Length: 187
Image (cartoon, rainbow, N blue to C red; front, top):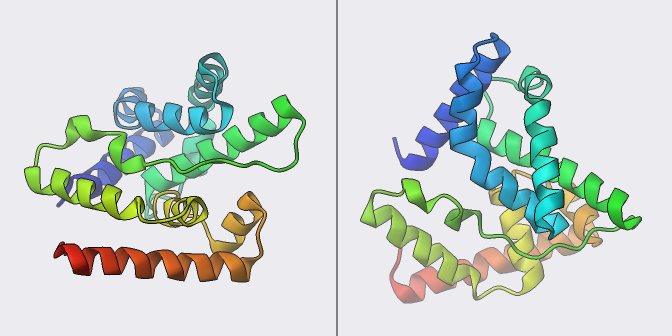
């Protein structure tokens, strides 16, 4: 089991413990998710105090959030999605805007403190390098598809594009990344 799969398993188990009322589940979940959740909050709010408030609200609602989780799913992606939605809503509330424009966030670099394998770290570096080949919209689409588990429809709504345009950009981005890996010899 690789470190990402282990993280998903740990998050799923912690969420299940919280559902059962076991308080150590919150501590375990905090250990696994705190950096990622704060990073997502900062992605939208760009203010430490606002991000910290949002994260605090998230932890205050963790029982409710855990109750909505279906165990067979990816708990990491679920929690990222919950925080993402909350951050978007808070951003809209603070700014009074209806549209949200965010930049690319590299989730692969968030939790490198747990990366103990040189092979995994090298893969992360290769992915980061491939992502640099993409334009800003392609980066956002790849990030939200594969790291935040969003649908094309959700992404289109987030960035204010048509679903067909998002689909074309996604295919273009995947092709660029494939070409990068083919040329660099990274598999």
